[in-house]
Length: 187
Image 1 (tube, rainbow, N blue to C red):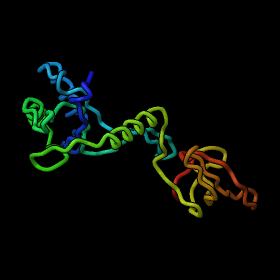
Image 2 (image 1 turned 90 degrees about the horizontal axis):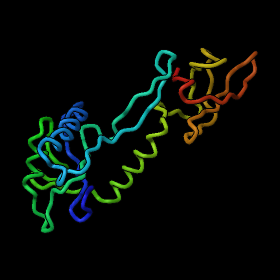
Image 3 (image 1 turned 90 degrees about the vertical axis):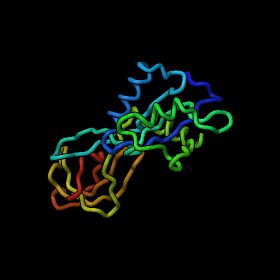
Image 4 (image 1 turned 30 degrees about the vertical axis):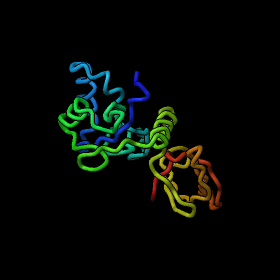
């Protein structure tokens, strides 16, 4: 595991859409080039998103930092000088554009940034965040359930639970109905 005195997290800029390919390449090369003592962890910060498409609920993975990987590695020595072996290992990986920071001087991420991001990823690993956010007063169409295809007006939003209270007209009367985000779509 990482030596806390030597390990720091860095944001590495990669070709957009190539995050997984670059991640897999680095992970594979860590083993084959025996870099495990310098490169400790490679992450693609993501979250699961649910949305309704054509009346069907779908789940997708969304990148929190598109075009970036975050890597825990020993890149700067105790004097703040670049560790050449790590620098060239990352820089020469196909798809890597560079490090966050200045052109020739990578800047480590702040511990608070890293802890917040890791906590966010861990928290969202088990939960699915709705993709669409609604506004009170907005007209929506019910896409699923007993009120399917009916329009209603958003009265209340509960983002913690991913639910909405929508006022739907039933037999000419306005009735509040609690629905999950994925059960409605913008009309």
